[in-house]
Length: 362
Image (cartoon, rainbow, N blue to C red; front, side, top):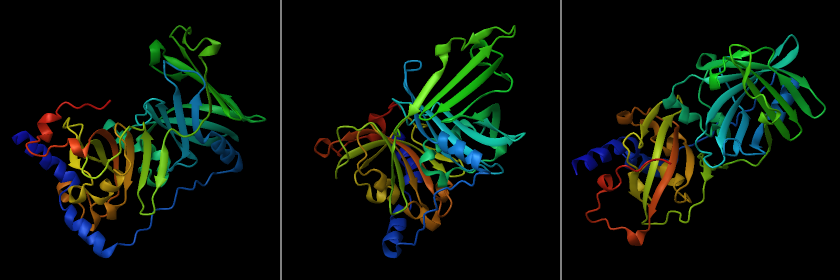
């Protein structure tokens, strides 16, 4: 029982403490809120703008790769001190809320020819969850600079009739699959995008990617998540899958989450406690207003990203106990692990902490 009380206190530090006052203030004042404008890139020239537009959007592999259909979303996003940048997120179709790759593309001119440079993030694993799904709301794109990125390779691009094609100007170092260096090529032809990588051993022999069918072909596809930009300023990115039940009054919800500030700080995680946050729906003063809104229509077993403006979070006061400053925008990656129907819930003697210990994210 002591463990359950301790865990409830930890969760309270993030989701509940001081919420009643914050909600009362919201109801009495309804503070004015103006959502930030959606990000509009300022491309350096028409050629770069054309390539960026051709790359942008969602892509799906035409054949399974390693047993999975891969999907990729490319969206213009700002990077401090850099121009002409796009955010790239690669996912497996069956788990789109859990990217296997987050990267930055930059388009730039080298001797009057356009090159595409790829970058990996160097912000630490604890912060990476903030980027997941942020292609849907790049006005909230985390503040990153060139110092937070590691350049990996360049591809020289030539314009073609329906797109562009290109390859690396020389091999680049790698440690993948026993190779010591690699080359890469790309070809975009209308709604078809083909990427081919090849790895070389120290003696110059091809270690992987030698076969013509080793190239990965993508086609344009619908997005792997729906995006709801609400009038109140909240943004909900819904990945699914659609479960057989959504929250109704009196239901007991078991929700796992990671919570972030927009500077990359992860201020809390239910996974670190290996216990979901358990509460009755609607949460009322048990949770911040935006959290309650984010539970609407959130089906059993599905995943969402919630972007909550400050006035629907902790307001001007913030939450010093959780190191959340005033008016902070909060970002949650959430998983509806379980919904207990109201008629099945027995509150008397129900020990949330002990009964759900060991509930893992899958």
